[in-house]
Image 1: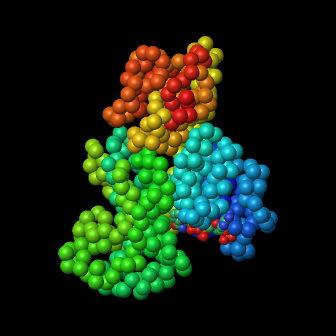
Image 2: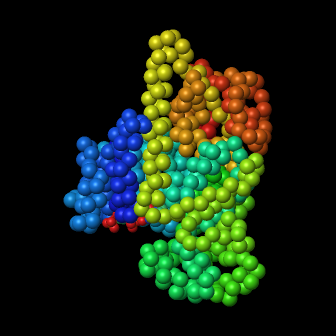
Image 3: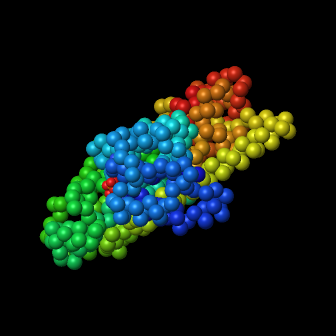
Length: 454
Ligand SMILES: NC(=O)c1ccc[n+]([C@@H]2O[C@H](COP(=O)([O-])OP(=O)(O)OC[C@H]3O[C@@H](n4cnc5c(N)ncnc54)[C@H](OP(=O)(O)O)[C@@H]3O)[C@@H](O)[C@H]2O)c1
């Protein structure tokens, strides 16, 4: 597998180092080499389809301050010509426009390339467009490290908690703010705590994005879209930062056995970032730079996760987990193809499959979003010929016949979507209901993931 790393700073270099150290493990597990065939920083790039030495790239960047010899003016031109399978987009976050990262991600998805990113700007502003583009082009867009760095949360919700209704998520999503507030608990004034955070490298020279709550708000927007299936952007979040928290407010909270923490909150009806009073001893009262989130679910109740929200190796670890998920899917894809050929040789119908139904008007409901996320993050769409997965846009665009009564599986009881517009006899349909389908029969498919497979 060929990887292009766009952005060669802390995270880009950290990921190159991780590839150097984990290459053998990946090869043992998936039987594939992962090579870096391109890398780009703000001014230069380097490409070699035969593969570049990750550690030599890091050493060169350190020594010469550029990753490559060649300059560029338009990154899209470089990405359009480069030979790669997966784009790792780790250029700087821009919450106003999406920055260069937005164009880079679009360029890769349009070429049908898988994308891994921890760049919050494009996701917080254009989540719906990007995921639809990925689905349309049959590729994966993964972004575990964009929320909470190494703290597992997106894949946890999409996979381990897939049967749960997620009621709400509340969390500390910015280690810099938490560090400052923890220091204020100990009596330091805000300015001094901020200065100390900057000296220790926890806060940027311009700390606005952190202390005004913008960074946390990006993560709330990403969670709202990816976990709750909402269709929101950064601009929909109600944001209050920590700049107006006084020493008096902190000591008043302490006198009531509480601490003040910057909390991001998301549910079906809430989208907020702001300082909150948290009882001492509560999982969200933690001190220091860790990120923590409490996921409230219908069956499991509250599930709390915690981890390092930033850092070279930590963020690279989240990217590695996304890369391995892509490798897993690709390996399965190869199995599917050989199964399809085997079935074909045996005269069996490879076109039988299953279709997940969803009415168009339900596409922004929580169930629909979670289903979409779940399927998308597993790199599949709604149809499984012979129990295996095929990308929805390709099959969904083909005529199919729904064989009523072939109900095999459904998500936890969701909102009824009423009688579907599907063929007679399909009966009442619920979001996530899976019906047997048979391709190539000639009737238009009326269900599908979102409105893709109509
Ligand atoms: N650091 C973390 O722990 C962490 C955690 C989670 C998410 N993130 C996200 O990860 C991304 C990268 O963070 P970082 O800490 O690695 O930042 P960084 O150290 O500032 O590195 C950014 C890199 O992007 C390059 N770059 C700038 N403009 C570019 C452009 N237009 N096209 C391609 N590359 C460009 C920079 O080039 P030069 O080297 O030439 O300046 C630099 O190599 C950000 O979006 C950040 O929000 C970071």
